Length: 207
Image (cartoon, rainbow, N blue to C red; front, side):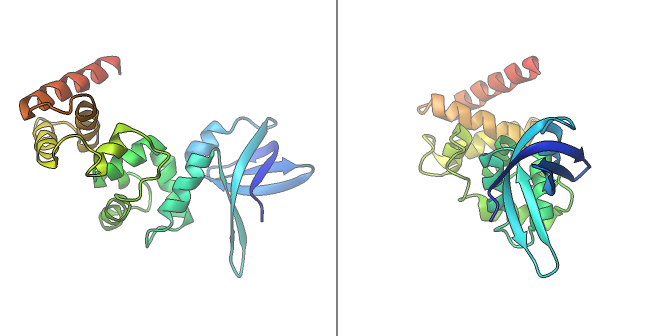
């Protein structure tokens, strides 16, 4: 079983790279994000590998780091998500954005990926909400885990609804409320909303 390949980039297409390893060219299917970051033809590259064996083919899927590989494994545990759809999701959302979408139950973010319709997007955020990988050690993950959040669910939920009603996207509103909840565990609802709006305003100014 192949776990990692290191070699020179022979060519790059819209869905795979050919990696020349000591004169042998391996066709490795990757996400769009990995293909954008892997480097240029002729440069050295290292990819972590998942091997899928079928009756009619052996496919190698490549990942730039362990985090992306772990997300690939997790995504493909969901019914209806094969390797192609998992790579489309990873190409559309970064690991942090993916964790945030799942934690905030943001179906629209999931549906940005090719092959993910409304029903599959709902299944993804529902089935994975309690399975966000441990390596995503962010306030989003902590706030999404129920008892780990320092704020009562009713307060954070009310604050989230208020921000969404003000026109903010669910994912960005959730991230702001989660961050505020970590830093201000005793805050009242009005304070949570005010501090969350301030954080969102700072992010908009920095963008």
